[in-house]
Image (cartoon, rainbow, N blue to C red; front, side):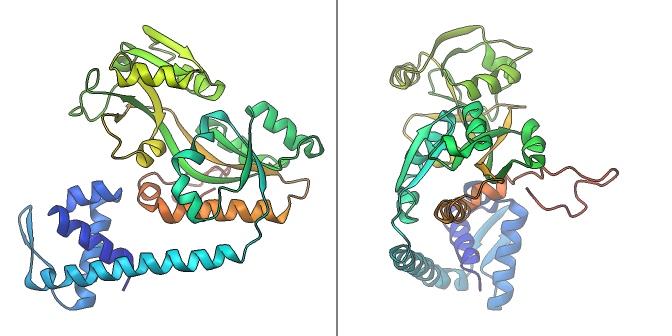
Amino acid sequence: MRIESLHYFLEVARIGSFSLAARQLYVSQQGLSKAVQSLEKELGTALFERTGKRIRLTEAGFDLVPLATACVEDYAALEKTMRKHAEASRSCETIKLTAMPFVAGLFTLMRDSLDEYDLRNVILAEKSMPEILEDIADPTQSPETAAMVVVPDAALGRIAESRAAAYVPLFRSSIVLVGTKALLSPRKRCYTIEEVAGLPIAYYNEPVLESILKSMFVRHPFENVIMHASNLSMINEYIESGRAVTFSDAFSAYLSAGAEDALYLPIRHAATFTVGFLYSSVEQVDAATLAYIDRFKACIEETCSPYLAKHPLVDARPRPEGEHPASGATQS
């Protein structure tokens, strides 16, 4: 019996809807239904009565709720306790990393998860992509041996083909719109690029974000930029007061779920990109840094699995001529 199946069952029981539970869990409704059906088959009894689109717990389902809750909670406690023992046996060596400004905020957004996985003991230096590539070309010039970078989808192939750099993708994301009800409608499932271009905009002055937005809005330039600066506190004041909207990404929106007042809404045909670690494949990278990258990837996979299921990584490797994308090629 998979603990994930019990978790899915509890979410459906709590919400009373497969479609809403799937949306909450960031999984497909079909996958969620199959998981619950497999659980019912394994237990030998129906857990839900289904009448059209309406569902309700059977007597067996009611009996399972407290038992499944205890199992899920015990499993979480087991993982947390064993992780502490595993972390205690690891080296406490401080890791030196670089990160592009656009993604450096992850170390704050994921603070609790990174603490659990012993991933906060780092010295972080912010650098641009050209500076990072210079460091990779000549690693002797920099104390940092790996960097967290943003790679637009169009550049993934070049990164994958590079003989000088190794790339470990963590997650895929896309640009989203952020604001309050003063300017955005929570009922609107998606904004078009043209609609966004007409809104009052305050956004962060960062080269990667600038490049992504420039390509995204090439046909519909911004009509009302009221702030374009590196002062995040002032940008946040504009957003919180309802005087402007700004931009974030889908992964940050997932991590910020439940934030008061802020609305994170998708943009149709938004630019997509991958975030991951880049390091030299020519010069030897120290074992501690490679172990850190492995643990960071495991942290993302284990704590953000619903998001990863909804936003799978793409295959960046060049395919032989005539090969179909679904012919079995592995993800980059």
